[in-house]
Structure formats: C-alpha cells, structure tokens
Length: 270
Image 1 (cartoon, one colour):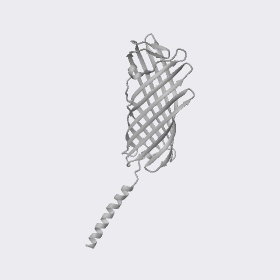
Image 2 (cartoon, one colour; image 1 turned 135 degrees about the vertical axis):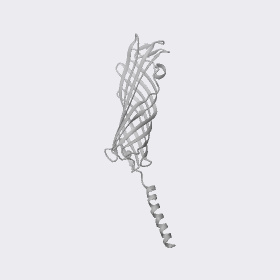
Image 3 (cartoon, one colour; image 1 turned 90 degrees about the vertical axis):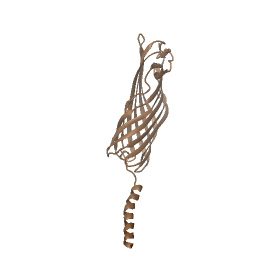
Image 4 (tube, one colour; image 1 turned 120 degrees about the vertical axis):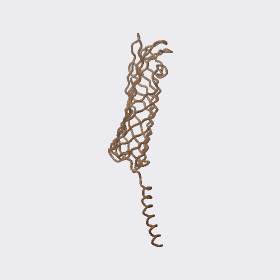
C-alpha cells in the first residue's frame, strides 16, 4: 500500500512540476527579439480632406472639402509597409510608408477660389489629391524584458501633398508641398504567448518653424499572430491627423486631413 502511495505521489510530481514550470515560463515572441522585422499589407483608411490655397497677389481662397465638394472618394485600399531594425538591445530604427492618391470629377454646386482662380458654380472640375507619408523614428526602450518592451522615440512624418483643380477654359491650378513634421512617440509591445503579441504606438507634436506651422497626431494598434518561426500575420488599426500651413513666396497652402482604418498585413522577422 505504501509503495502504491509513493508511486502515485511520484507520478503526480512528475506531471505537475512541468505544468507549473510551463505556466511560469515567460513567452518569447519573435517580434520582440528578432533584429529585423518587415511587414506589408493593405490599409483601408476612411479619410476627410480639406485644403485652401491662398494667392499672395490675388487674395485668399476658399477652404475646399475635397470629398464633399469635389467628389473624391472617402475610402480606398492602399499598400502599407513597415521595417524595423533593432541595432542594439534597447535601440531600434523604424520606417513606415503609405500613400493615398485620389481623383474626383464633379459639377460644382458653389464657387471655389483656388490660388486666385475662381471656379464658378455649374463648372465641371477635375481634381486630384495625392498624399504620401514616410514615418521614420529612432527609439529607446527604457523598460525591456523577455516579453515586454516599452520605450520612447523621436522621428519625422515626411508628409507629401500634391493637390490640383482643373476645368475647361480655366487651366490647372496646383500646389505641391513636402513637409518634414517632427514627432515624439511612445510605444509598447507585449508577448501574450510565443505566437501572439500586441503592440501600440502614439505620435504627437505641435510645431512652428521655417515656413511650416502644424500639428500631428498618429496612433497604431497591432495584434500579431506568428505561428511560424520567421513568418506571421497581423490585424492592426491606424489613425493619422495632420494640420499643416505652408507659406511660400507666391502662395500659402493650408491642409487638414484625417486617416482612420484597419490594416491587414503579413510579416517576416529574423
């Protein structure tokens, strides 16, 4: 009888000790440890866009709602790509890119003045509004463990605008702006298991320098599933709010934009 009891007790220890160890084990997720991380996917933002182009010589223009007044689509699927390099245990370099190019064609319901040119109600106006954003940042993780990563970063959103209005007999009035918008960021990544991880990032800055005045707020949320050692999949959410005024010698451009929507992606890390 004693032998049976000892055997049962021994078997219980053999079974329970590994389970207890497994429960206490810290999950190691590749996205938190690999030196190189790349992801590409489809971003589906819903947008709002308003812009105003004032002529230095001919006076102020009208604030134009490109979606409502010019018939530009409010939602479109666009590519998004991100790369991250952990060049030291607590340091990382990150780059993300997306672009959204849209066109409209609509008969105006009201007068619009754009860079000194007035497009009257009843005129068919062809418009375009192309935008791209390259986000770069260098980050430092002030709290880092095997399954957690919290840090701060400094970087830029390189916002590129190309907006134009044209009509028969009126010609084309356009404006192009490339603005480096500095941001401060906080970020975090957490391994839930060895295959599941979550991440978040918040960028924010208000600035006034050279010919630019503006503000940037950007947010990213990610849920990553990496069932293979070097390949995974993710579902994310992105939002970007930009207000920008750029003053040139001949014209002043004012832009207000929002982008909000889901992101589906595939990633690789090593």
